[in-house]
Amino acid sequence: MPVMMAGTHLVLFIGCTIALLASSTASASIVEHSLHVQNLTVWRLCRPQVITAVNGSLPGPTIKAREGDTLVIHVFNRSPYNLTIHWHGIFQRLTSWADGPNYITQCPILPGSMYTYRFTITGQEGTFWWHAHVSWLRATVYGALIIRPSRGHTYPFPKPYKEVPLLLGEWWNANVVDVEDVSQLLGINPNNSDAYTINGKPGVLYPCSRKRQTYKLKVVPGKTYLLRIINAALNNQLFFKIAGHALKVVAVDATYTNPYVTDIIVLAPGQTADVLLTADQSTGAYYMAGHPYFNAENASPFANTTTTGILIYEGASSANPKMPLLPAFNDTPTAHKFSSSLTSLVGAPHWVPVPSKVDERMFITIGLGLSPCGGNATCLGPNGLRFSASMNNVSFQWATSMSLLEAFYYNIKGIYTADFPDVPPLVFDYTNRGLSQSPLGFALKGTRVKKLKYNATVEIVLQNTAFVGVENHPMHLHGFNFHVLAQGFGNFDPINDPKKFNLVNPVFRNTIGVPVGGWAVLRFQADNPGVWLFHCHLDVHLPWGLATVFVVENGPTLSSILPPPPADLPKC
Ligand SMILES: *[C@@H]1O[C@H](CO)[C@@H](O)[C@H](O)[C@H]1NC(C)=O
Ligand SMILES: *[C@@H]1O[C@H](CO)[C@@H](O)[C@H](O)[C@H]1NC(C)=O
Ligand SMILES: *[C@@H]1O[C@H](CO)[C@@H](O)[C@H](O)[C@H]1NC(C)=O
Ligand SMILES: *[C@@H]1O[C@H](CO)[C@@H](O)[C@H](O)[C@H]1NC(C)=O
Ligand SMILES: *[C@@H]1O[C@H](CO)[C@@H](O)[C@H](O)[C@H]1NC(C)=O
Ligand SMILES: *[C@@H]1O[C@H](CO)[C@@H](O)[C@H](O)[C@H]1NC(C)=O
Ligand SMILES: *[C@@H]1O[C@H](CO)[C@@H](O)[C@H](O)[C@H]1NC(C)=O
Ligand SMILES: *[C@@H]1O[C@H](CO)[C@@H](O)[C@H](O)[C@H]1NC(C)=O
Ligand SMILES: [Cu+2]
Image (cartoon, rainbow, N blue to C red; front, side):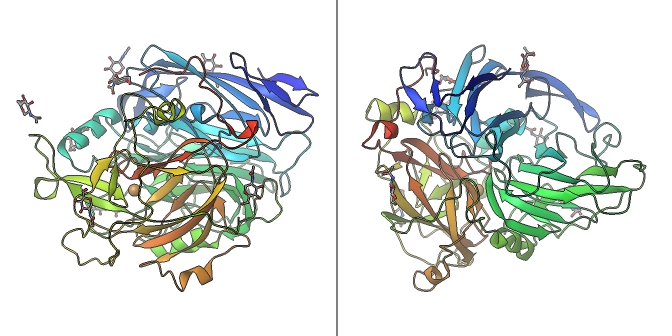
């Protein structure tokens, strides 16, 4: 039950000595929920499977609040695994402790333990989601997090008749933790998933899924629905389409966009899109469908199946729905057209202009590589090596003895080094497909972070590399949104490409699919002290090291200093 705190701007944290100013208008609420994480046996694809699930459902419960509210979420870990929860897209202003990534901002919640996440939603509204940030648990531990405008505020588009979360997911006929462990042990690609899902259901194109395992959305003719679409899949970008219907994109990653009408959307894992759908076609049934946008070159086979749900008009039969024609799996032009057509809606709620003065410039290569197997283990990757990934020739090494945030806060040495390089060690033809070995060599593992002064403006060129294979990596930044100034294919051209920067209304988001064999330029303002992970949101690449961390120092005022950790923060 939300507890009202009418007529006050002050929200006091219980068990915490500081008071935080909530930004909102007349009232802000405390929204309190419990999440119970435990084994659940579910039937999918003709067989039972034990999964780690939240509150006995897949996806887990949708959490709803308003801008300005304080969320208090008690997480009970009754699963056999270490657990943390991340609130994807939430800035966590002055609450870096509640961000969630394992060993970055906290130690895990041990099996049998609980932890309470407390944070206030300041200056953000839209479609977010929550998910586990340990191992591969997010395959089944995820749900929607919907932030509505604060009381008295409205959307910058006509109020929809209904709002519907659509969570796209990925399903294994296996224990996902085992799938991940085996691939790590052998240094190889993990097994592909067995299905994609819409709100946890695979749909009619998979065995035993026709009746109860197909998501259905009933609509009233003439009404407009706000679909809050979330790509919660582990390792695949997804095309999504609804037969016969136009989709009007009005927000991505919880920032408003100029309305963009399309019949196809593409989302990378971690991205969200708010889409208006009007039931303006002839009364009947229509499939919605999703399948991968797969762009890795020289890659092993991928999960090339298709998930479906059914849109049914009131009064219509669900028989013989029309099927949309999805793009080819490797249709990069269609994916790129969608991603590069989005612009932010100037003047919309929480709109932020592009900061003009840049304090820190970084050029970061992102890509796959190989590394020695290690010890006397046996790897089954190419030439007996293991797959690896790096940013500027650093393959991220996860800490294990404490979180980086504790090391930062208590000034403990030896957990990380603040020497993540601003540029790669070598300038080369990054996207040359003909190289038989990486000019960078074997990237060394390291917990190397980039330190930023409070409120520094950071501009990053992300450049994909071709060794092992080019691929569109969805890079996700914790703690901030970034402006996407430009993106393109091939090597970034420092002379001519800056002329194409959109400094007026670039899309403002938390996850960018960097074009395959290409580049993207981001800019953000580091106005939030704490420790923030920046990583590829394909879970297959995360343990390979496709990550780094920004450590943002405290600012000069009370409202720019990170408060102490919550008393119940899990210990390692
Ligand atoms: C939960 O599932 C795991 C994996 O299948 C299993 O090892 C464990 O025994 C189960 N725990 C309980 C309490 O059922
Ligand atoms: C999750 O389940 C618990 C236990 O049944 C319940 O108390 C809680 O309200 C549920 N949480 C949500 C967000 O539905
Ligand atoms: C991976 O797939 C292979 C072949 O289908 C299967 O034998 C193996 O058990 C799977 N591994 C895991 C960990 O699920
Ligand atoms: C999916 O991939 C398999 C090989 O891995 C191939 O035989 C099959 O034709 C592909 N299906 C589609 C729909 O592309
Ligand atoms: C190599 O394997 C042996 C036997 O399993 C083990 O005792 C030893 O610690 C291993 N060495 C390394 C470096 O992993
Ligand atoms: C990349 O890192 C490895 C390991 O530290 C090093 O051997 C190699 O020289 C580096 N590459 C370049 C181009 O400096
Ligand atoms: C942060 O820097 C911007 C300029 O980039 C400035 O406008 C703003 O006032 C600064 N904010 C704080 C809190 O210092
Ligand atoms: C769970 O977390 C604890 C505390 O950090 C750690 O000691 C333990 O090794 C972890 N367990 C696994 C299976 O990773
Ligand atoms: Cu990746």
